[in-house]
Amino acid sequence: MTRRPKPLAGVRVLDLTRLLPGPMATLHLADLGADVVKIEDTGAGDYARAMGHGPAGMSDFFRVLNRNKRAVRLDLKPPRGRDVFMRLAERADVVVESFRPGVMVKLGLGYDALAARNPRIVVCAITGYGQDGPYRDRAGHDINYVGYAGVGNEIGAEDGPPVVPNFQIADLLGGALVPAMGILAALLDARATGRGRFVDVAMTDGVLAHAILPLLGVLEHGATPPRGTGMLSGGLACYNRYRTRDGRWMAVGALERKFWERLCDILRCPELKASHIVYGEPARAAKEKLAAAFAARTQAEWTAVFATEDCCVSPVLEMHEALADPQLRARGMILGDAKPEGFALPVKMSELELDPGRPAPAPGEHTGEVLREAGYAAAEIEALRKEGVI
Image (cartoon, rainbow, N blue to C red; front, side, top):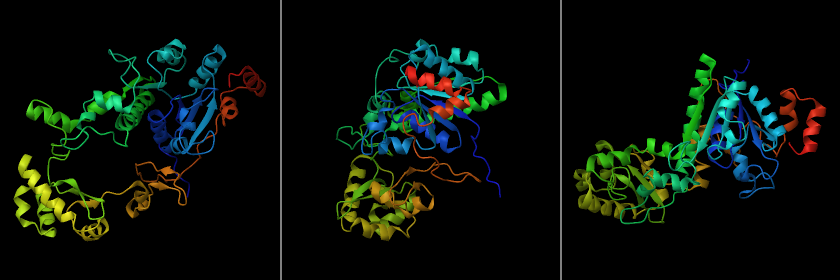
């Protein structure tokens, strides 16, 4: 039986992004079948190549973000390099970049210039603060963007300082999923109308737009509630984490009354059933009783107890344990066996096979191949190499 093409088969993406946000966005597009051409400068290229463990030019960080992509080395500073990019863009559907605002325009490769040569082109610019506003030219990282969006202050325990999570909320939500959504919407429109769009994504905006619970706290109280006191941030006994006898943790998400009452029965604390959705001192007293109950057994023992109980209680796993978790394995989320090769596309579709595909490319591995597809002759490619353009 003939395998059905992937949803984005035939879509070509020119990816100028580096590090985490943009490459994560284009990884999703590549896994959905797009031909993602990663364009790096002729110097260091994507800084992720040298960040962390792994051989030269292929760190684990780079490897897990750049599978299913082809790599081209191209210097955009000289006119010849910009001409090459423009020629590639004429045959592309999408360009994704993460430079400071105005850089592409200064290079003569802004949206207007690209659209003049290819009216169907979709250009997505991923930045920290967007293409306009007083902060547009500021440098930043995830910790800065979540700070401005009012979310960084929310992360942490009551009476404690804000903490830095090992999960890049702005980079991955605002800088990967939001751009992918915008690109796909603009691409669909371009297919229907023949006209592309400029997609302006600010990672700070992406965080703020999804900060629903912090917003509700302000709407309800007229000001931001203290850290760790909200419904889903640690204020409730029924939605919290509790330490076990061996120093591990269990996650309790018994928000519905039926789950909470079953939990109280299992823990032999029937008197807590009345403390389901309570805050402040009543919640503190309930949390202390639950803490004492969970401290009586190890995480493994509690995991076995709740494995057959329907009340939203689960172990808090470490990453190496999550990689071996039977549910995640059954869903095909872990690529590779002896050594994980990264995570699979988190979207399951009928007739879409999950496979690792092409491994992450070496620097400039596909330069000649991509240029030949754009109509360059062998002599032209060799001349570009001698000039240092590629």
